Image 1 (tube, helix red, strand yellow):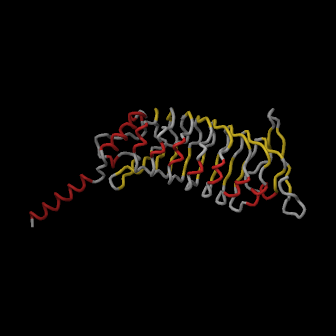
Image 2 (cartoon, rainbow, N blue to C red):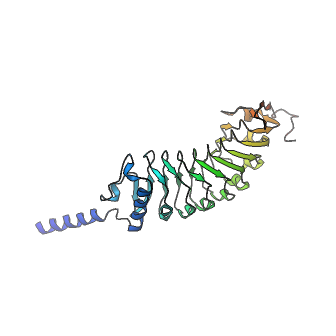
Image 3 (tube, helix red, strand yellow):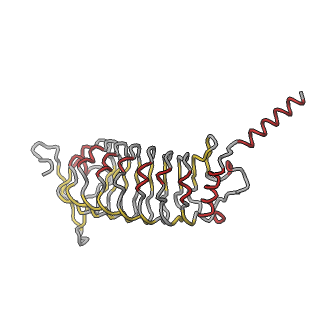
Length: 285
């Protein structure tokens, strides 16, 4: 009986030691992240000699790193390119830190990623085109950084995307045609950038859209009248652009709608609201 108990304890101890024994390649990536972001000064530090399963913000499943959540943890430094080698990673959340530099060009290698939140950092440069190659991405938040350049033209490839939040950056150019192919998108938050051009009538294809903010950009043209008929659209802010023409009453009655625009000189003006539900009111002219 004693021998059986000893054998049982030995096996149990062996299993506990092997639990969460992630590959050394993944452990080395985590160590690289720690070193690149001044880990010794983190609010909650890692004990690199302790089991990885005890490291703050790390989620392990089936002996692979599937989650990194180090939000508001005083990460200072840059994102190492090696982080894109974590092919089982589903969540990367580095919200509210002081990460500078650029987003790795190979970010698209994270094929299992479902949520990417790099908001409230000091990231600069452009959004890599490869980000459009992450098939299961549902949440993409990189707001309040120093990003510039245009949205990747193939952003519409992110078929499962539900939240796209890029507010408070320096992004510019017209909204890509493919953006309107994101038929599962619920939140599109692009305020306080330098976007130009028009809102495509194809926005009516985004039938799941609940929140749209484009305020404080450089957009112009007629606001599509069909936006007032988007049933799930609840919150809309298009203010402080240079839109022209009229606005359907159904759209103007959405939460947060503000008819205040500004011309090229920064002088404010107001869009006229019409009730196009009445017979005889014309659609887009």
